[in-house]
Image (cartoon, rainbow, N blue to C red):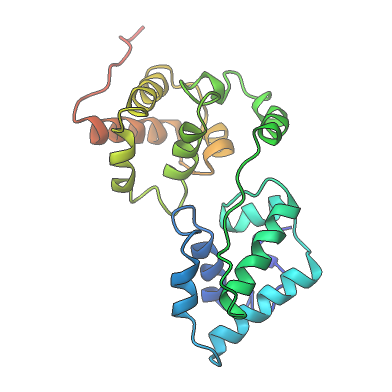
Length: 224
């Protein structure tokens, strides 16, 4: 199912409604339910349409986790976790519930189950990036920092890339990517969901990113 054709009330007629869901489930904003609740005014068209959209989704549960990720880029591990969170969010925003909606924690067992189908298609695999398979935070760095709506605001990740515990892995990962150029743009999109027009553009961006984070040029392999 295309994220542009969801059978949700008002979906195809109102771009702001699509944007609202994208923003609310943005990785940097998904825990900001209180702010979203305060921004909605009961009785307005916007309030009623968002409420109707939530009720439609909760009543019919028409979407899988892949459909949801296709729109919002936020990946729930299971449909049960996804609809449970949506119900808590609906009650918090629209019924006055004081139960704050918490994003479900990731289950490592499920991660191990869902990784192989697409990782195994790649040679090399994302696990060749230093820290990818050992650190959930490193995976989050690549998946969130390159999120289509975050990639232009990487100042948010400057501090993260310099954290004492993460900096060695982020630096080593970028050095590996820049030195080896192991992935095509199609492969890169598989695990970051960020699109580049060409490999040259992708790796030039990674060089700029390295220099931005560490104020120095990355080591490069000598030409063959």
